[in-house]
Image 1 (cartoon, rainbow, N blue to C red):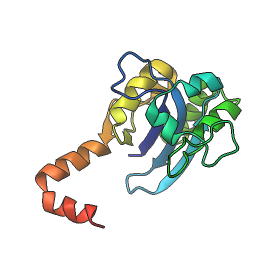
Image 2 (cartoon, rainbow, N blue to C red):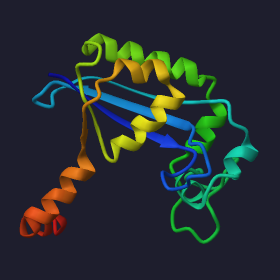
Image 3 (spheres, one colour):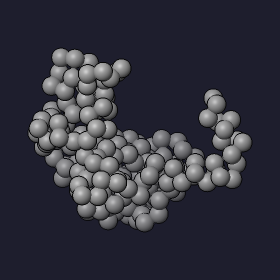
Amino acid sequence: GNLIFIDLEFTSGFYEFRQRAKILEAAIVITDADLNELANGSWVVGGMTKDELLGLGQFHQTHFRDTEDGGKFPPLEGEEQGGNGLFSDVLASQTSKRDVEQLMLNLVKQHCARNKCPIVGYSVQCDREVLQREMPNFYRYLSHQIIDISSIFQVASLWAPDKMSQRAGR
């Protein structure tokens, strides 16, 4: 009955078909069925060079650079605010992709039986597809079931547009 909320940051977007997405960062929150948090963790995958990070797309350059000037990845000129600093975190991380996979698996094993707890998140099917290739041991432990929050919002917008517009106005 527990839920595995997962969010991954990749080197490329879902629609960039020519590029194989690699995982830059992973975050997990495990809850019970009533959404009471049981555990959480977040990890940054190291092993990329500065040049590789600078070669990533516009979304990444806008959102993952440093928050202010002075670092290896200063905010882009003309941007109102900097990014979240993920590029610098990736350079500093000594944690390999395999280490991150094992840490994620250890966390999930503490609260979820093999193949029993669904993963939850925004467009989580995209995360699942990358996990299959990038973290196969973790992927094989997960349930085939997913709860995709973006699908819930899409259906709610179609079936209850008035309520969704009220929500958007908050």
